[in-house]
Length: 424
Ligand code: AMP
Image (cartoon, rainbow, N blue to C red; front, side):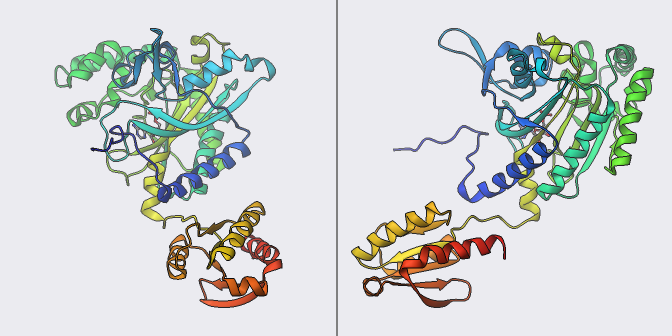
């Protein structure tokens, strides 16, 4: 019978790859918690309306990429395409804003977008997402970008750059939108179909277009950064000043407009030239009006999201794969010895010593092969003779040396070895 395959663009993360994931997630949790962020876990499905309102009706995500479906009750739901709207919903729904002037949250988990899959672009992918509510000054924008840079360093990724821009506020954007609209209509019909439509509905979105001829036409487009109001200009300059004092390298890139409707003022992207077409590893910015638009209090907000798959692809390019191996493999010969090895192995695990064993009564040769493959540093060998003498052999797989130890104190011996592994 033919086996069922996974959905296209939705990947398994197999045990041999999961070490990368665990390493990145652990580094992210450590850095985020250090900066005062607290984890929040929201459902993967939400009411469709949340994303339509939270991301923007005329964005690619909402128009083309959402996994939306009617459930058995006739309610329209969607698999979350990003985390911000859900975190805002939870923050408002649980009245979290009442207990302090500002809040920092993070979330790590799967997101879903019906995009055309290719390397670095999938239909289920994972994001590290962080949000701050209640702070409108430039300090937090700079701190967030500084934190993202530190996170890249802690994960072990080099050669990426931080690009920053400002999108102004609704006031300066109103002015700019008209300037841009005029530019686009002066350019005539050279744009792709999508851009012709965006020109009318959401002109700023033209900068997201991946079509080469559009990008060429846009090279001489007016830039928002030249049409900022006084407050927005001062905010942006202060962000830059903080980044410089923090020693966080960055480049101003007026082309960073981001794909979601709600951004204003600071936006940023972490980019690389090592992943082909998928150059963005993460990005974020300020979205002061969103919480209010989703029915919450009028608080400022800033956040970012980073793609785990792309981080893994980068790590694979520069590092050797992290392997998970037990400290010890317990080999045994004979039924009685196997029963003792089984009991002692559980005791070792209870004491925190990672242990593998033979359950099947295989030959010693086959057990040694398995031990070797598992990457165990030590193999305990217990035969019926050893058992009778209350002894066990300990083989160091690295030096290929063997010694005989008393069976009754083997738990303590291995516990000491395990402790030395962490404090050599
Ligand atoms: P966005 O929410 O679109 O700003 O995306 C933030 C980050 O999530 C990107 O920089 C990518 O690293 C990652 N990302 C977004 N879409 C995908 C996708 N379809 N597949 C893999 N990673 C993605």
